[in-house]
Image (tube, rainbow, N blue to C red; front, top):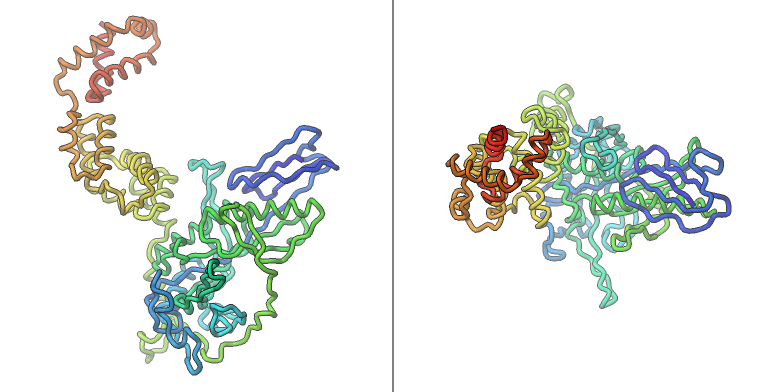
Amino acid sequence: MAVAARACGAVWRRAWQRGAGGPAPAPRGQRALACNVRGGAVPAGKSGLTSWVPVVGLEIHAQISSNSKLFSGSQVQFAAPPNSLVSFFDASLPGTLPVLNRRCVEAAVMTGLALNCSINKKSLFDRKHYFYADLPAGYQITQQRVPIAVNGSLSYSLCIDNKMSQMVTKTVRIKQIQLEQDSGKSLHDDAMSQTLVDLNRAGVGLMEVVMEPDMCCGEEAAAAVRELQLILQTLGSSQAVMAEGQLRVDANVSVHHPGEPYGVRTEVKNINSIRFLAKAVDYEIERQIKELESGGTILNETRAFDSKLGCTVPMRDKEGKQDYRFMPEPNLPPLILYNARSLPANMNHQQVVNIDWIHERLPDLPSVKRAKLVERYGILPEHSFTLLNEDGLTEFFEDVIKQTQMKPKKVIGWILKDLLSYLKQHSLTVKESPVSSFLLADLLNRLEKKEISSTAAKQVFAELWKGEGKTPLEIVKEKKLQLIQDQKDLERICQAVIDGQENEVMAIKAGNRKVLNKLIGLVQRETQGRSNPVLVKQLLEKKLSE
């Protein structure tokens, strides 16, 4: 079997020789797949070639950032003691009625506007029936018929061949955004062979963002979700912390031949990591292609991604729409929204949701922030993506800029190459960094004033990272890292290096100027990084020309 497939191409190609057996290649994540087996594989484009078009759509559940639940006054808090935040309505006791949370409505409108959606001035609530132990009412209140927002779009960027300098922008259509309740949580105790139910999460407000099947691989799906996550966090409509279940993704995946109808899709449920999302989608595409090529069929089923095994596993057969028995929610009237034109003059503004008022107060979205960073500081576009992708890194960068004389183009190098690499190496967030923006700015100022060399600055940064409370100046004095200011001492060291490197000197005088870098390095070693490389180069060139 031979496989040639580009991870984000419009078409994944499979070529094989009739009668050739063997397993399909294992998924390779986000990079291009390529596998060649000796023995007569048919090259792409010749007879025996079958092409597959992967189709990926996403349903994303974002927990609304609100103090209370969607239809009750119960508090929303992560990791609270089990069943400590449950109202009578959350437990579905008879006689209780839902009261809609205004904050949740405003968050959904804000998100819809940010995603270029049309906001429905009249939306409806429905009951979606299914029976789980952690759903006390036996139904979920959602918006199946007329959701709060429809027909939007999300633009996202991704790297070509994992090169940050080569990026392409793509757009996925947003079918709708709907308000709905979250369910409770089932906790499985294998040791006691029992399942416990925690209803703290039952009734928490969710926004379900339904994306059209416009993506074709795991990398595209992951990039789209990451951009959505940044937008939600910028708006404040959701904290979108995946580790806390505040952003959960269901991926719908199918494959088909070009020109044919879409294939049977499977749904991979409750993916709680962007990295796992990319792996799950790519694995599922590969699994379906292998299944169809071997003469099998794809079941319309729900699957889960096993992160330890790196594969998807069956959960249950998909339930058709009729199984949910959708019906209008009888206890909630239509949700009516207004804009400046439709708002009645005698209406109390505190009791309505004004779409225009929310639109006027939208903050700069990530795409706008990136453009401003590039324009204001002259940094590369790919650097702006890194700054925004790391929580708090943009603020850290701008704080350093305010306190240092170094140009932003140089500062960004220290932020991305030094600070960020240290953070990742120690699994820390920007807020947990032992090196504050003030300390880094102080260090860069000393480097800019040529009090220390860049080599010495790296040493100082390493000492600052230990978090011992020392300032850059204290470390410089303690480690004797100041630049040698006496030019006569530096000239003497340069002469000693020249005298000890006769072959290199001859090569330089013969026209090989690259060898000069070796002499500069030897001087740096002699001075333990305390010499200015620019001055050293000038002194060496002067002495070699004598």
